[in-house]
Length: 142
Image (cartoon, rainbow, N blue to C red):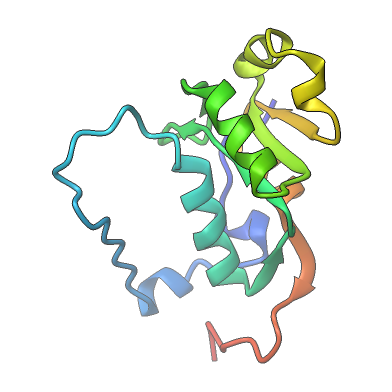
């Protein structure tokens, strides 16, 4: 199964990275965290920026990513599901290896939620990025 995702997979010309610089700043980055749970979310935000494609509404996601595009499991799934439910989220993307965490949660807390279990970033992009472009897209490459 494919695990790497390349610029071409998203419809981007590789030259875009020669013309654009990206700086990501995480305030209070020195404060210890429990883990890199936002990896797939950060990737999705960057992919949306570069492709100008919208991201599915009412969706949550959590998972670490490797440099080769594999999605790894994270902790705190029960708490994250409760937070998503409170935020009226309907669709959640998780690592395949986190499936067992969901199976341990009482069904009444899962009602109305749709789970997608992924193994790589290609699957995340397919689920999260819509074909629709944002209004007034910026020109990444001229």
